Image (cartoon, rainbow, N blue to C red; front, side, top):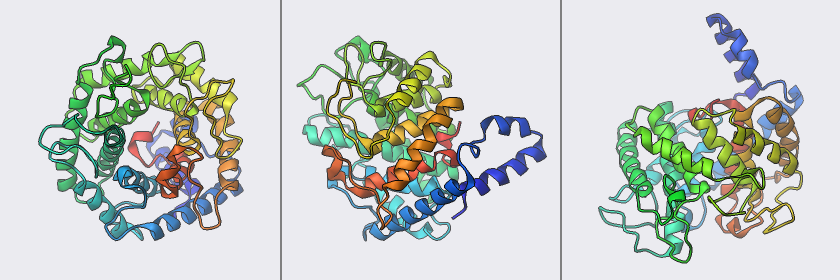
Length: 385
């Protein structure tokens, strides 16, 4: 595996040759940890990827519940790509090609990327809530992965292009579904209407769908400008001044978590608002909350966490704090890395979530931790600052 520090040094040579040394100095991240810690990260990631590779199933998927496919498999492929491994290349190339084939095979005629999802040429919302909620995540995660790999030139580009185009139309269709509240316009939620509640958008799914749209646009696909603008406007409405961070839903909701703080900051960064007031305030909130206690999950506390997931949250927060840079990144990454490394199992994996999401297994959490440790690599286009 190519070490992160080596990548940074090599990139430095290229930029210096091009006359951009000052730009690199402003963005480099190799000074936040000592060399020995970077080396430990390299070893940890390689151990994690070897474990993930050993778990791959005969159909190309990575293990999880049926309802978690191909989203979990997409996160696993993303973890490899974040450390320089692409389909068809290197020691994991064949495995990753097989995984991409599985992901594409899950796509329905309506464009939705979900093993268990609505059938037919049009997206039906007349489905169970269990199917509607997981299919929304599977679609957004998998569409993002295919777009990122396409941008990086990995796998069967022609087949990926067709799949991305179909997924893009499905994403735009879901964004345009009627909303019962004006405050939810521009966002995404579940595929089923979930009539037991009044909310038609949430920050979690909206963040992933926006990442896909931004990735697809960067890859050369036609993405309506207003779709991104409307999505970002919804994200801004999710900022909760009372708690000084982003909430899961917009007005009036106190469902805050470390994951949603990260998702909000990241969405703002993708919109070119890295230094927005909301992002900086939410970054300060994340520094106070931290991730000192591994796999901590609080349904509710005096600080207001609701529905918090450790691994999911630390992934979102790490990518977000990297985007903020400066003191936010320097104060966040070193202590977070120490906790992550200290709690990696001997086989290279990390525990399942201490939450209802434990059912998705530890291929899911291990992929998230490998992505978290790879935040400074800047290899996935969507996470580049």
